[in-house]
Length: 255
Image (cartoon, rainbow, N blue to C red):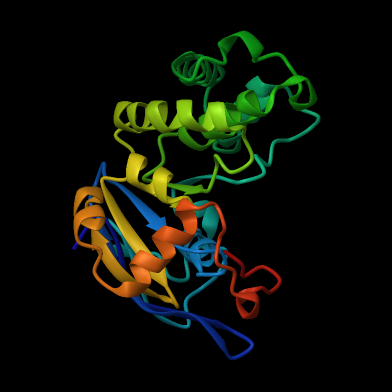
């Protein structure tokens, strides 16, 4: 049992099964990368943890408490998205501060926390800029800062490097583990990029057809991929040609 625990989680949409009895334990301070091809159910898994969806069966626990039926606002979860999801009318400072303002934290605390995380992510010089004035790299770091600033119990990262250029993606593969260690974050990071999974995860959970085919440290995944399907998914990602499953595509239930 981990700090974040998924126990036999199932989820279907219109009788199409997306997740079939998924179980996983994530230790406090650990980063687990959920790796799978497009349509494997990665984003659905994150939305279940965040409380945007409820499981059809199974349990989700943070610490010793089940969060099934608990609203997203009460789960103490931070989340960063593929498309950054920044408020276009607010400068970077206010985007980062928004979770703290929602909790009505004192102004001195807000300023201190925002400047600390902005310095750590090297965006303190653009805090007064609107999102349209930021580069994609600065937008990505602003979104990551917002997800971390309140010190959430669990951090969910939905393929946040997908929309940045190759140079920044490489830099963030090196930098992100340092940031997560600094914040002692308990994190789930989803991606369909095999190299990214290998670089970022303390462990990798390979999601295939609604189940975890293998959960192991990166070195073990590399040396001894368990099923043929894991090799297939990894090879598909390595050649930058994701294996899409059109039947998995649906409104609100992709990836």
